[in-house]
Image (tube, rainbow, N blue to C red; front, top):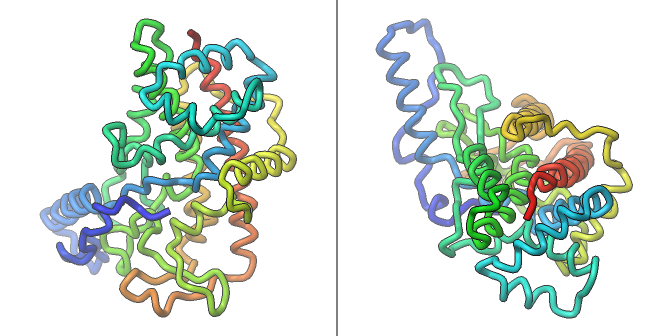
Amino acid sequence: MKPATTLRKLDPEAAGPVFCRERGVTMRKLVIAVAVSTAMALGALTPAPALAWNDQGHMATGDIAYDTLAARDPRAVAAIVAIMQAHPDHALFEKRLAGLSGKARERRLFALMAVWPDDTRGSPHDRPDWHYALKLVSPARFVLPFTVGKAEKAFDEQLAIARDPKAPRAERAVALCWLMHLVGDQHQPLHAGHWLSWDFPKSDRAGSIAYVRRQPGAAPVDMHDLWDSAPDRPIANREAGAEAVAAAVEAAHPRPARVDLSADPSAALKGWERESWGLAKDVAYRNGALARVPAKDKARAPVLPPGYMAKMRTVADARVAAAGYRLADVLALVRS
């Protein structure tokens, strides 16, 4: 979905271009100046892709994590359910769980936990820059290879809180929700990769100002929205839609015999991000070959090439499945 409104108000042309083509100029000062201006512009203007997958995708990762954990480690499920009793939004969860009991209630709780960081936008718990860790996928020159966004740091911090039996239970409950959401976010390719070029001199904001059309005659859509909605099924009710996504991707992509969380969950997350980065580069942007236009020219947005939508759905389904299975292993580290 759309990046945070406050960041959308930033003028992408306000500070002048930061992308520089080499024209035989090798002066050290110029190289340093361009690199520094790029770093400053990207740090200030790159978006907060606050909603990675739409509600269906995030809730489906929660469903899949529950299915996996309930079968393999029911004690972990019980610990998480107990911790969630202290969540600051406990009343909201209870309202949305009304009428459910037993395993159906537990499963829905996991789905709601996974989407809660999006549902809580604008609240004191909102953390817009936790939702992404972007690295450039374009071959732009003179650009520092740094990461924009705090997803990696947030994951480490929230995992430490969730695993700490001495931490206040309310904080642990919030941390659990963020862990579930962060794992889902970082499996969305456009939460790991973004593009910098002459057309997008301060990056394309994770695809959120790069426009295409799904088919001839269709309205222009930005690439970030396109990928956010990739796993969605045409079901209006988000809970039912999430269950349909989970059922489809679990059937198409069974859990592998071994999910490598490794002894270092932080390193595992970075590995998952590298996968997403590669998919952003090779599939989302087609190594730069995908035709798209900046926001100011969206009236002439090009139609996606044949096969793009089908490939995107296949990739998105596989990423939602992987996120759910891997999330189960992360949650298994939590005990009451």
